[in-house]
Length: 269
Image (tube, rainbow, N blue to C red; front, side, top):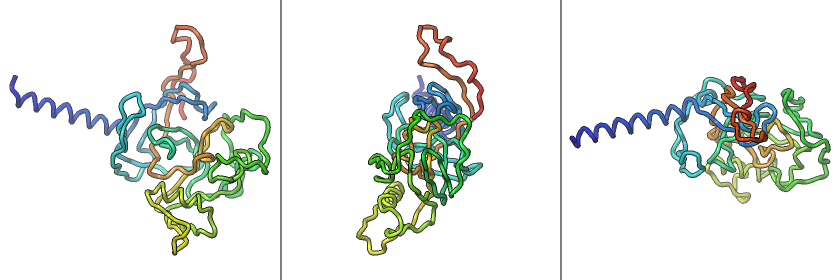
């Protein structure tokens, strides 16, 4: 076989694969939901179709071996999306604590807003957040204000049921060391690839990008911003649009059709 023809064929297929990869990562993609942190809005076992251009148009920022978390990050180019993230939107993003996977949660506060939780009631800018109909609480009890959960962000900021006021940083904000929690400032800076020290002469930090506060609708069983902090703008992936299919892994037996939640197929999010 002609070597030049073979080389041309290889180049053509390589280009097609690259184009398909960019389209999949930049325009739309399918997502599988492995946990129940968004139940009953999104169920464990849901297969979602999402649009990656809704909130920002971007090129792929990571290449993974299929069906694994093994991979590597690559430079990402980002442009404006078709819409902005509003409080209450469901968002697909890469969590700062586990960037190899995608999380799907609800944005409850956007840049420039102040959030707090009082006896499980969520308030944003002093007004009670209108909870979605499918919001659920697994625990009937409420952790009191005097209980400090060291796993909360920032450390010592109450607990998941009583969470003192926290400001969600916006691009261009000046965060002063004597006015804002330094651990919060340190986290925001590190997510932007920068380092800060309490001994800096200037004693302030200028925010380089927007941040968001995410929570699961299954409030008591969600590992979210209350525990690991803000989601920076550059880790926003996209917006889920529809449940393509759904499997109920609690159903027993070998017949996979008995495990399909047919009633969820085609549900819009």
